[in-house]
Length: 94
Image (tube, rainbow, N blue to C red; front, side, top):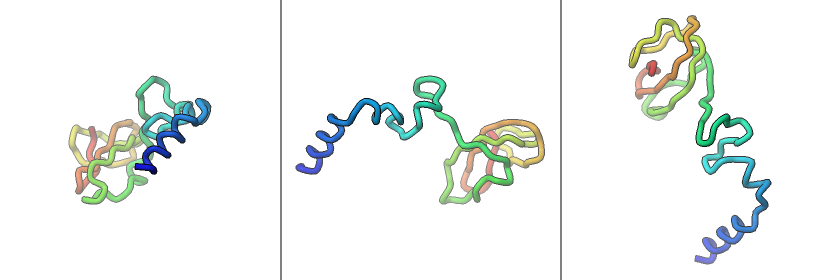
């Protein structure tokens, strides 16, 4: 209980400048164009991390998808920019 009260007090007395640096989700507010927006990390298909059960559910932005289809396995080398979702086995287009 003392720890909880101490943390609450510390948060109440933090300066507004410190609190304004990131949103409640840790996203830098200086890079967020609209209130509540998120910016996903982007990469090429080849740079995506391994898609396995450990990474299930990860979303990334892909900059070089080739002929992407919804829920189809992604391949690189193209010019399409799409969301990539790790389904536990493959990175698929969204």
